[in-house]
Length: 177
Image (cartoon, rainbow, N blue to C red; front, side, top):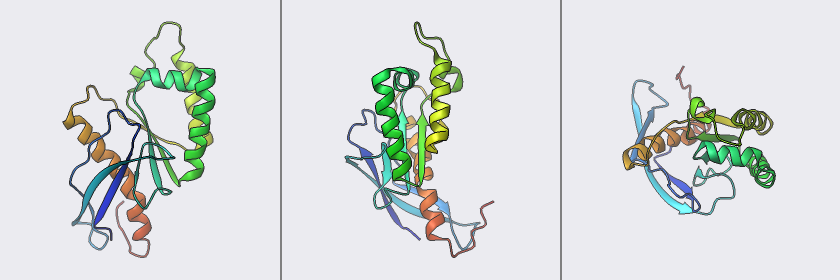
């Protein structure tokens, strides 16, 4: 069972998520106990997405989109759409569990924008999710406070750690569900 992990944060992240010093996961031998994992984080150049675990770069990766406007641009602007499709393809082909974290609620994603068609962007995003096997995580939050960034980071950390735990405990009966 892993005891330490390092989250790699892409150097291009302008407002990176924060991560706790420890997370607790279900103990593989006893589902009524937890197992602490020490967490560290570092910046690095990632070729896939924005967040992954060091040593598990091809297992799970999170691509983060910060706003409705970013999605609109990525999905509808001709140049950006082609670039984003290449990035989604690399993500899909480069890791087993590709996640797409959208920092918005459905209401926010579909809010009117002058001269834009949010529903078109959502439809294109839905098609991209199917084509590239992206697991969507909607995370509506306001502000960039350290507390909120740490809570989102903790949630994302569990998304990244789950495949590692499942892979490393495959011979152990884990009664999670």
